[in-house]
Image 1: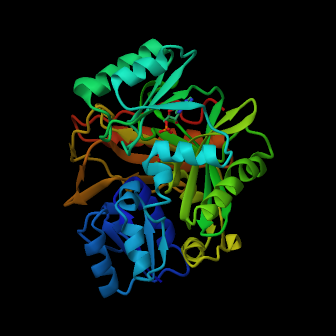
Image 2: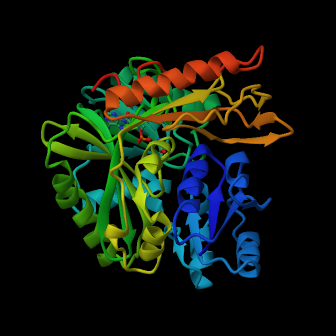
Length: 423
Ligand code: AMP
Ligand code: GLY
């Protein structure tokens, strides 16, 4: 197959690596891609959201499978365009993609179909929020409705502090992602995990799971980010985890989508809180996670490209690839001002191809003439495998140390030191 990966993050670096090692992959293309994707195929200088140009080029290049990386491409209808042109595409159309692109749509969908999730209220203005919060008890999670790159959620310990956030959003700050709709949600207690299920338009099949670290600082302090690290498989959850998630979440989602005449082809990423009563859905994403993908891809065995093509063709065969290789831990290195801003990084000055067995560097950067030129924010994910999570963790942090020593003068990247520690 001639495969196109849409996107340019560390996630697409990892996806393209696994796809390029699949027996059924003949040629790999990425748009717009990054240094990693360029090392395995051809980058097209086309933005991930420019469906029209992507389709024109894909037809010219006789692409056999499109894999959509970022939610922005899905929300822009890139999946619809490829599917209308009969090019097999892994990644949903825009309409079912609202499970991610609108938190209010997702909440209503879950309510309609009896999927466990936190109780919530929707507000549209500060006055409205003041009223909704007047009798609020306990913690309150404030969520902007639209896509905000992981930055539209604030977990407030009480109504007063939730109101402070809303004063800012409805005042000078603006609601992240635009618009005025905000979801106020009860704060759930438990441990978080992300479960990844592939949809082929008929049903969902769980392929893997990971634990992600959303807060910027050690010990889960500081603001929410897109994710500062991850490990897979999750440790410390019940043995019947997959069965419970399938029964309580995925089967009702599949029935709900069918009842609403939607076909979902792609990954359904279930962000879950494991509460005393079992799984409760914090969020859905409709694509692979970043950095979760970086810890999942090294664990895949078999023909990953064929697995995704099966889903795109409406007939997923889960036996062609499994996600059960050695445990993997990933640490994200970000520019120190992330997530407040994302100042660009020039010349990391490090040899990022340091290739110990089981260690990998996944980059959201472009490298030209030995100069690493990254957009800022989450620049690199360092991953390592090991016979168990403890060893994988030690290997990952050893690699981070080596990298930190090799970095150019004046370059400093921040990272969490407790990934995979609190199991
Ligand atoms: P989201 O973008 O909806 O996944 O939210 C980002 C992060 O905020 C999640 O990964 C959780 O750590 C936290 N969070 C979101 N909703 C809740 C909730 N209802 N209760 C507790 N924590 C939450
Ligand atoms: N790591 C969280 C996400 O990809 O949304």
